[in-house]
Image (tube, rainbow, N blue to C red):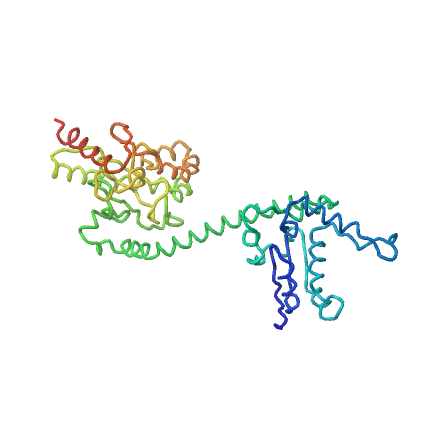
Length: 391
């Protein structure tokens, strides 16, 4: 026999025999959601058997009646367990004192860890197609009047539990991203303090306000990132456009003005590179991602061709498509702050993530393509015919 355990075993489900054994072994057991206990056999058969039990009478004096007939699911289950325990002797009586049964899940046990008895699960004990019924339905048929109340309380508990689970998943995801971004953030902080530590292949230009670096995974022929340097003007360093738009307008305007001054220099550099490599210039896109992949606010400045070996899937293309909406143009952000519509823009950012699932549509002519190879072939052909060879 095992020693007495102070921690209760909370059984969320079935099988009185398992509960009886745990009680006799010295464990405290709390059984919740008794109304959801499954009974093998059809409801009609279970009803006939319980009606037969209710018609039992005293053998010597029938007018005295028979045993007390419980209606509540928890009491019916309690009586089933009692029948498996020698409750008339001290050991059995002590075991019964360690048992608690409830309909639904009382607040005291909602945050407790629960266990289900595998060998008692209906999906394991009954063959597929076999009939069964719940104790709640049987009890309601014989006069238990609290089924609706229990159902309402359980619905509230489940909604509360689902909300808690969503928050927990979000927190876990946030924590995982923090661990993943920690080395990257440490590296960015080092570059912010000493930009000259970057190689010529990584650093385009810098000043006391911004650092401009080559995108490590360029999605166009020319693709750069402008990162504002940490400043005492900022209450905290923004990690995304959403964080930036949460600041006061004065602070937002300072950051945007700083980016704009650097943006002019970067555009000039890109045009110089285009003239050097192709003898002509073409459009440049500049903007933020609605939901960034880098945990540090950065402005994308890139040529409009979207031709790169690093552009490999639908998500890559749609995230930089100038007309989809996930790529928030720099000028649109400036206008939203100027017009007082920054909150509308900010509230729409998260929903724009669904745009990444849109079909592959050419940003040149609007034609839909079924896969990335076909789209990239079209982009190269259009670029060569209408940009490079267009006189």
